[in-house]
Image 1 (cartoon, one colour):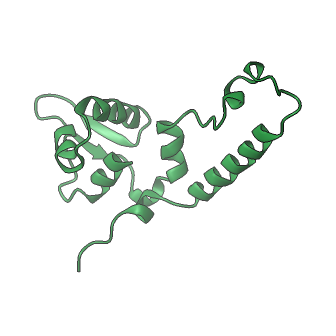
Image 2 (cartoon, one colour):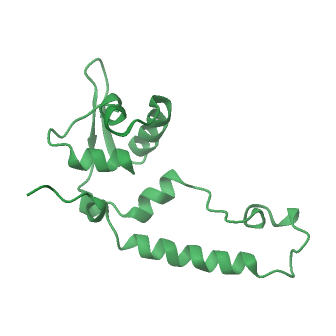
Image 3 (cartoon, rainbow, N blue to C red):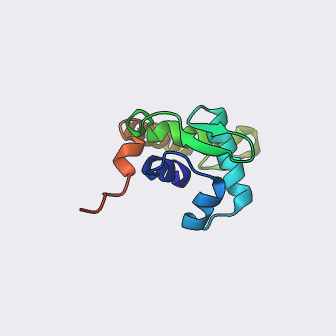
Length: 125
């Protein structure tokens, strides 16, 4: 999310992984993985080469937080049984997966109505 926020706030429109690293102090390796995912999904545009830069591919108001979260956090298993029910001795007797599943659906629905623009810090007056 920080990469997308940085991209949306970048006054020059183009930036590098090192630019984001300097501001947010996130490991370069992790940033490279995140940028790869965001580029592959079409949220960032990568201009490769020696002077390569990154750029937001769409307007901040067209990028929902649910879309970003689904890309960057593909496994929302809140309990082991949501991944593999066979590992739990309570399978068939426990309602926890249904409760967690309903909560997760409500959470994602709430994020669908929020966009990258909604989480950008207010610009100084």
